[in-house]
Image (cartoon, rainbow, N blue to C red; front, side, top):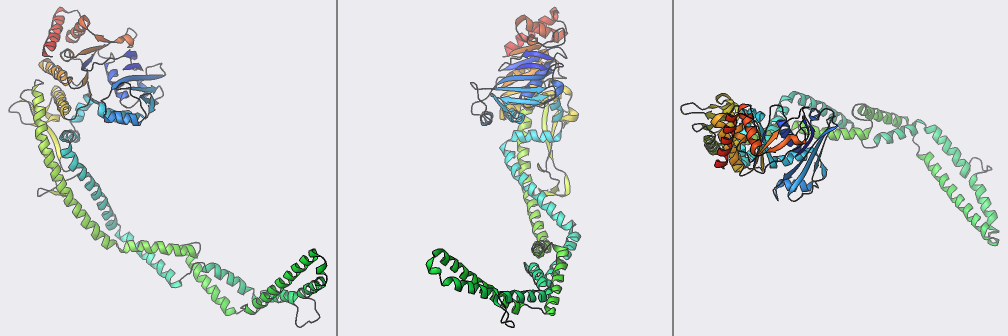
Length: 572
């Protein structure tokens, strides 16, 4: 990794061993910035406070080896990243304003993609993870992770059934608790539908009646106008001497007929006048029929107005016009059908709920049995690891229990509480020495014991669900003496299967590293390019001496440091 302008680090290159790398240095020298840098490359949260004062941005660049054909490679290639001889070039930039950018294989990518890749590439553990291990939910997750498919398959089925049960229960509660409101809604809908049914409106009827009312209200004026127009076109029988349009047009046609043969243009005009005469006779006939058919009955007008009033009463309540009233009726009839079917629906939902609870109980029992079987193997494996970590008499076990709940599901003849992950409360117990009763690790483990339990758990995971790189940030806190030596030895063994990076204050741990990196500040308080260096030979002895006694030149400390290195080499 190359780190620039991050915290106390000005510009530094960190070269990690493919095996076991120990990062050491004085308190406050910036060792944790190495962990923070790796966290940023793996999609960790960006914080403007990380940017070195006076710098525009902080930049972390890294080259990560990825297993060929792994899901990480597939996901990276899908994002358009290019691999460089089996490695991915990753960079993360954090601006002083807090903005963050990520690049993968030469391509700009969302930061979330880096976090996805991290799940397959690196396991990061710090002191906060130790505290997380104290939570029962994390302990159950650890057991489920170790169990693999044996738990994952029934847990997946259980989760689906649980989700459906929640939905069914919620709907059932909604129907039953709102029964009064739904009954009131049904009464209102029923009243409205009955009111509309009594009127029996027809689509478009309101428009038709408005036109008829207008016509009936002006019947006399319409009849008079039609009579005058008819007389103008076809003549008035009571005035045989009068001149009408039809007579005049007929005279014009006769005058032209006599000479049309002499000029085609005039012949065409004659034909057009003939067409006008035909049209005049048609219109005159229709005017005569209109006048005869015109209904001036006041009783009919009263009936039309009464019908319009009935329709208006509906449109005031249910829509702007009859079409909207009919649409409201259609929707309300469907809704009323739903409301009136509540009793039947309640029966269906109750039956489905009971069936789901029964199914959930069976799946929960299967899940509990799988966890119990995995817990025995997991506890035995962790106990064996603790023996390698200077806790030879410690015993780890799991307490898998359920809580009685009358509203729960039935498992093995008992009604117990249930949740999205089953019915089990899983608790990790530790008996640190013979005769000591198993107690929850939150109560029965010291800081050093908790560190070793967590390391043992991770080593067990490495054998069943391995990742290429493990990063431990001072998880050896609270440990010393022989236990520290055993932790160093166990980390060295883990490094034979994966890359291990440890930030540590313990010389007993650092001595077992394949490569030891020293982080040190310059006089101005920054870590420069030369501030992260690989320690070899005499330099490494001096650093181990400082870690042992606080004095690089102490002969006793130097002898002890050389002895630690010799023992570590012999163990390898």
